[in-house]
Length: 362
Image (cartoon, rainbow, N blue to C red; front, side, top):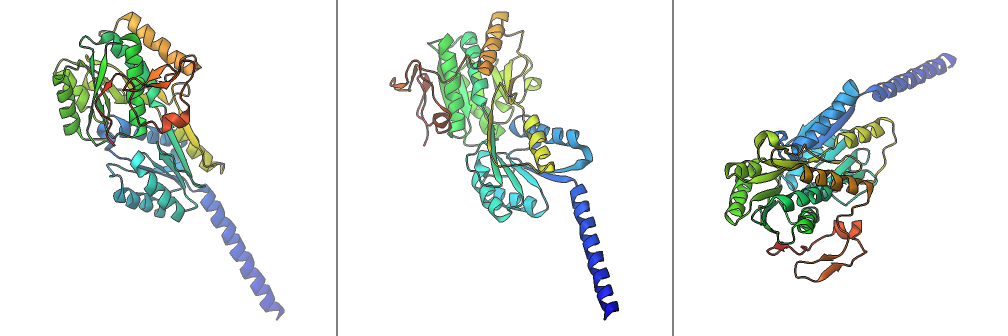
């Protein structure tokens, strides 16, 4: 009987030792980080910059992480399938990098409560779901001032993806700054109903140029608009990353999305077991939004100095892009002098400011 108890005790000790060793092995395992991309990593725009962030995670942590990504994932059912496969495949944290991934992310997160999820540009959170975005509109305010001083036709062409608040906010911020320096300038918008479709984006740019636009702005992800503009001898701004390699003489600057620091910090939080759900909305001040080098051949020193001062003012809070007075498209007052729109108003923006032509789609 005593021998049996000794044997049982030895077996329990062995199991406990095995368990501890397995826990140690798990603690030493690399953190697996998943990324879901709406476009190809070679778009040289939105997805490209997110993948630069993924590479920053690898560079920071080396063999302490394993990263996986799936590119060109359609928003909707396909996104849900891909997110679920990454979660089931052992991912510790998953970054889903498009607005249309919001509902699939939340749905899958409820099925995998021990996996952390980070959704870009959305607003739905849970215990294991965080949201993050950048204040792209701050960069668009800077380039609006540039456009207002450069345009000769006083017509700016703007290519939009989908009429969601993020994109509408950018159009409005750009137009407000444009008309601060050039009250006669107007913005014409073409919607392409896609984040990444080089053919549609190129045709939209050509249509806007035919309507008199001498500067092209985009909130889509390919380099096609900038290339189409260059082919027509028209100036433009890059989107999400520095696109000057595709239009070295005609890109004036580009709004650059910098996700590197955010991705590194969130993965580090998982490693240190201090990750919590929250919301991050960084801008120029935090380094999440940057401006690519200015085209010194196309822009005067005075215009560049104005752009730099504008960016610095936004960073230190002395310039607020959506400070009143602001009028809606029909001339009605939207924001009184001395007031400013809060984040809640910006996040739900569904109207055009004065100076934008055409109707905002539903």
